[in-house]
Image (cartoon, rainbow, N blue to C red):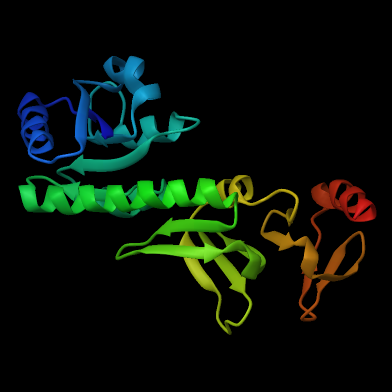
Length: 231
């Protein structure tokens, strides 16, 4: 059973979500709330949020960003310009109002797939990373990662056997937290390396086993050198 928390300041929009949710086996509506503040008591029980963006108390996007460990999110809004921003917070999907039941059903299928991926990730203990793109889900085996390069809102993930890096819309801070800490280390505001790929180490520079040279940021040098000296 997937527990859904719906948040929208428009009563008719909430009613429609309730109708749609009741039509789909395996979904449970925890609560239909008119504001994020009203939804607070239910957050810890929710597997997913269906949330509007433009609301008077707090912007739905800002509310999701404020959560330390948010449930999976499907944004529902009348404003198409928020779509890219939605993917920046790793939303499962973005439903543009007015949306049909079939469109809603497609979003729920994506949600089910994402929850299944999360279970697989938990069972694999950090062996895989999962990303949402505009058109599909992407799974990356962390054992193939050589290093990760941050470029603004995007990441370039350099993998074994691939000439070009995989580019995803994701935050450096988030991926740093998700990677196995015994195998990866951030050495620069723009670089995370796989420790088993280090060929040569200096306090201010790292050479990987494919001869790629990466700088060590000044604020990372002490932690990097301490970590490398122990390895």
